[in-house]
Every structure is written in C-alpha cells, then in structure tokens.
Amino acid sequence: MVRILPPLNALRAFESAARLRSFTRAAQELNVSHSAISRHVRGLEKRLDVALFRNIARGVELTANGHWYLERISPAFDLISEATDGLTDIPAGQVILSCEPSIAQKWLIPRLGRFNDLHPDVRITLTVTDRLANVENHDCDIALRYVSEGVDVSGYDEISRAPVYPYAKPGFASLDPEDLDLTLLARQHLIQEHTGILWPMWFRQAGVVPDAPLKLSTPLDAVLGIEAAISGMGAILMSAELTSVEVEAGRLVKLSDVGVQSGGYYLLTNDKAGRRKAVKVFREWMLDESAAWRSV
Image (cartoon, rainbow, N blue to C red; front, side):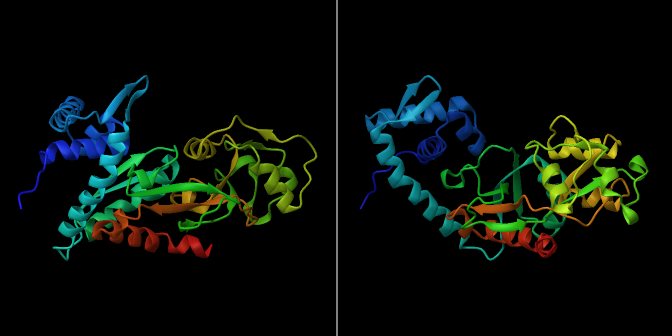
C-alpha cells in the first residue's frame, strides 16, 4: 500500500507551528527562518486544499481543520521520536529546559558542567524566563519554577522547599551572627523581595515585635536582592540554594537559624518528553543534585 504523505518538512513545520501557536517559535524550535515555516505551511495548505491557519491581530490561530489535523499527526511525530530514541542505549539529543532567572543563575548554571561531563551527547537548551510554562503544549520538556506555599503541586518533582533565612554582608551594621540582637536587626535596612510580606512574616516567626516601622527597600528580584546584600545595602531573606555560593565565598553570612517557609522550587516534566532517555537522565540528575536541599 502506497501511503499518501505530504513532504515531511512541511508536516514538521505545521506540527510545530500548530502546537506552539506561533510561526516565530516554530522557526526557533526547528532552527529555520520564519519565512521557511510560512512557506512550508502555505505549501501544505495548497496541497491539501484546506486552510489550516487563519490570520488574527496577534498572529495566527488554527482553523477547525487545523485542530483536527494537529490532533492526528502530533502523536505520529511522538511515536517516531520514541522509536528513534529506543534504538540506542546512550541518552542523546536535546532537552529544552525552562527555568526562572534566579535559580538558573545561582544554582543551575554553576552545576551544568557536571551534567555535560556525565552525558556529553545530551544538549541542554536553556530558556530563562519567569513566565508560566506550559509543558503540555511543548513549550519545553522540563520547567523549573518557584511555587508559592499552598499551591497544588501534584505531579511535580520537588527540588527544594528550603526556608528563607536572613543573610547580610559580613560585618553589616556590626551585627554578630553568633549573638544576634533581633530587635537591632529590625532597625536596619532590609532588602524586600517582590511580594513584600517575608520580613514581617519572619519577625513574627522569630517572636520579635519591631519597635519602629521596618526600613524596607523597593522590591527587588532575587538576583538583584542578593547583589544588593553583598554590597551592604541591607539584610535579605533568601533560601539557602540561592545563597550557598555567596556564603561559601564569604560574601554573605547567615544571621539567624530562624527560618520561614514561603514556597519552593519544583520540576514539571512533559509526559511525552519524559519517556525520552535524555529527558529521563536530566530529570534524575536534577533530583540527585538537589537532594541535600530536600533535607534542609
């Protein structure tokens, strides 16, 4: 039986653009130009004599025929990928990881060289962003995100739920971590994270009622906040996985063993991608690397 198949490149272009809902992102995924994606899709539409996409103000969207076609050919590409992966015992290929900037810079990137040494045939493509990740739409194979306390994390792999502790530059405000006067700490400049609630939570946890309004900074993200603390601008509340490098280098000191739980970092893996050997070994490596934080 002769199969009626359109050109494979046209099918790949359509499947990627339809799944990602974007010609631009499909071009990035397949490492081709935007015009190449458009040309392949238009050629496929002409060959099939149906419209698969319609133009809208913010880009393109699938037609009913486009949805129907995607639902049927996308699993075929998954099967081809799984079959190809099954022919080798050595993990290989690309793993697309979406990661928040703070954990990427302070924890992941300093460790990635070790993974490359263990698995030289696996290529990690890192996308650094703090926007929501949709792994089921194949935005990525794995996403590493901070999840606030109380949010349902069913199906996620825990990387760390380490509490946040106060850190500062050595000698900051002449505070002595060995004999810290918490009332004195409450009078110092305090670097505030984006929610603005952690310092009040921490002082309540420590059993301290400040004798004056807290001197909170303009909210900063984690990376900028750590740099501000290193420069002596104030004390900061941060989890150990984001400060370990700075503490080991002597740029920050932990001021107190009183910690407060505010959330944690979790891995979410695409179900289909998670069956690939490369994705499996990377997920397992991430869990091994972070094992110490889960016992904090």
